[in-house]
Amino acid sequence: MDSRWSGLKDIAPQERLRGTAERTGIDPDALRALDPREGLSTADADVLVENVIGVMGVPVGLAPNFIVDGEAVLVPMATEEPSVVAAAANAARLARECGGFSTSSTGPVMIAQVQIIGAADPHAAAARVLEACAELREAADAVDPMLVSLGGGCRDIEARVVHTRRGPQVVVHLIVDVRDAMGANAVNSIAESLSDRIAQLAGGRALMRILSNYADRRIVRARAVFSAAQLGGAAVVENILDAAALAEADPYRAATHNKGIMNGISAVVLATGNDTRAVEAGCHAYAARSGSYSALSRFEANAAGDLEASIEVPMPVGLVGGATRSNPVARADVAIIGTDSADRLARVITAVGLAQNVAAVRALATEGIQRGHMTLHARTVAVSAGAQGEEITEVARRLVASGTVRADRAEQVLAELRR
Image (cartoon, rainbow, N blue to C red; front, side, top):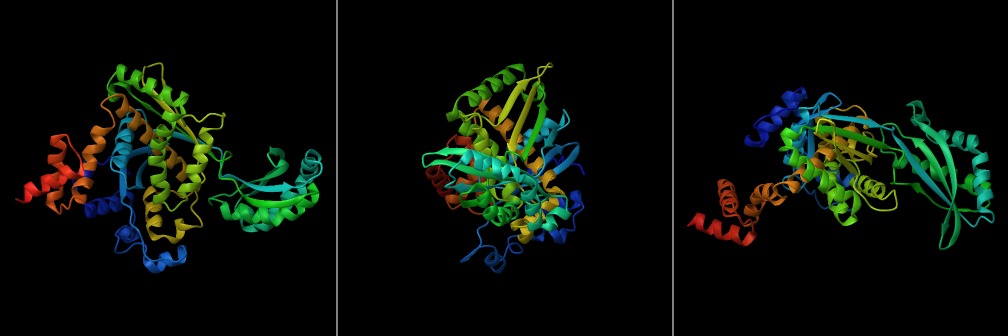
């Protein structure tokens, strides 16, 4: 498959959908769920969450141009924000010249925590738990034999003493390889099953037994090279490096810098039916792992003067369980990406986050973020003013030409157009 798709923005949605099926080799019927009339029904939604009254649609855009570890990928992105999909696709196009994105990962390992309170000798309690490591690992694997049969299971037991304002507590970590699952249900079940025995060993009482969304054992890294010539020259590279340096040093800038990364990551996580809140919580916690909140990405100039961008984030996503399997739209989006493992999906998502980040910082370091964003946002403003059909394109064109993309101006332009 060739992920390069010229003219994608100029064709109708149904043509894009047909083209996606042709390029990926997917049966067109498998993508019918992306039509709102065929997607998640109210009856299906009623099975997924409580007290369902309807289904809220989010646009799913297609980001072309991606090459991840030598393989071409078309990436569906679910987002309400204009310019996100276009920015990711543009950065992916620039990265193609130098081979696209290269990734690595530590594997699908999650942590379940068991909190023990009331131990008279917390340090000795932690030691007793560690002495029973082999017993606890065996008990953990017995909770989910299917996971073990797939190559997963408990890998290690850790115990530490955490000093809180309520006094010292023993916190036991169960380190579990969850294979192609996100893993929350698996590790929560293991934690609850082992908590009584852990409390007995520690001489205290088990309180909370739940996974940690700070998935720092499930790290994915991505990097890409962007030629200085493609970016706009050596001066642009220097501007990008200075802008990125501020995000590393200043949490006020880092929050916005990382939000740009999450624009890409969360859009693919949502499109594939994974847990956006879990991924976002883990990424932001990881950004503060040094004790100060900082940028999740790093930008450097290589020996040739080109920009080398890299990122490292926790990425707890899965292909089994949850909405990934039960939501027909998520199934269609996973099929488009063409992945057969959670690890591959995590790598693609991380590459999209890096592409989004490069696009945003480049825009900030050159023309500013508003020019491209507002050009695409103009259509949304036109619709909010009441424009319909062909009026939308013309109102948006006039707003951009005037340099004022606001709701009140859109209403004026629409009234003029209709007169």
